[in-house]
Length: 482
Ligand code: ZN
Image (cartoon, rainbow, N blue to C red; front, side, top):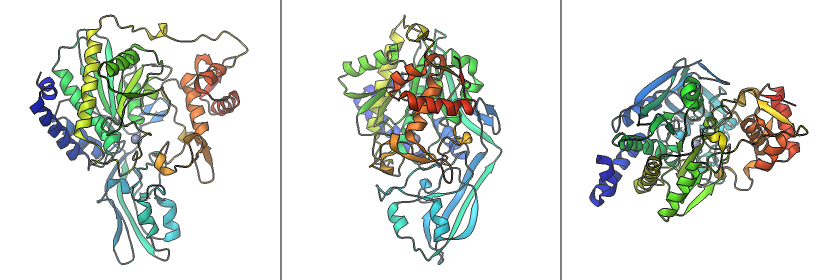
């Protein structure tokens, strides 16, 4: 029970915070992505705290609607002026490079360079976080201040020393067996580079929860996984379909160490026992928290709760993603995140797990809770042809290829996500509203929810849902049942 003591005892409270700090500092500078040595190195460092297995899935492996991409690694990258001064240097901050940028080494004009640059006009001294996982291109992220200083008559030397090769996707896994085979999932994502709250904090919380639970005699079983977001979760579901179908419930650990308020993103059911337990615990401890309804935008709960798996997943955050100003920017660093805050979230999670462990008769059959049956034939019912996870929309040209921007408030304060236009190809844009409508339809189209019911649940107009459904049918992702 070493760890229990560590967070109860006043003197050792400091020790636990020191331990959290040390690991945050060691992991923060590493350039992680959805594949590559950054993830491998990070997971092997975490293994020093508590052991788990590191596993690999080869590039090219098909996982439902997705495929494991080539492995990406990077050594160096910079933009140099004609005098050889490095204006932008990956070695100063790994956010400077758009993750998954292809290698390049050439001299370009200002006009040729600009389409490859990304800044935050509303937060002039912060570097944004951007990715291009499924569109082979290159790009740099820089502060708006750095951008404004660029000389329009200058020629620039751009070099990205990266590689995209057949390799594998790396993830961590540890299954703790309790007396009961009934299993909970504790998942987090390990693919973000130097960003502290999103989601180095989640990864660090994950390892300390694993260590703490290993030292307990457990009633239930717990499946700990640390996967690259989206593709890692989807490939894990595909590889462990039978086991994952049996999971009772669980958590996705994300953004847990900001100074802001605690938050709880509810399960897709909204009234699952997990929702009740979390709320009870917060009120028992007199902790104020913001309650967030389930949303298809978020993290891997979208995939875990998809029609085929329907695992009710909750997320307790401290300064939730999308909500804090520094989200997906270089200001989400180790000054923003504090070990004390992470420790607070750790304690909340431990209390909730203790509460779960204390219950004998949790209501496990989610089918009893809510699966509306639509018998009225006048209503339109669709069935998803990819019920296992969110579909890969970018390969169908209906999702932005540049990642990291969705719901980022620092990107443009004046427009809400729904009204925003995201670039999907050279000339085409898609609104946040259409993306959301598409994702909600795919989430609810289990053959039981009619479009009318989806409209009622999501607040979208029938017209928008009908248009999106037509598009999805055309892309062979939906099938009309009546
Ligand atoms: Zn993120």
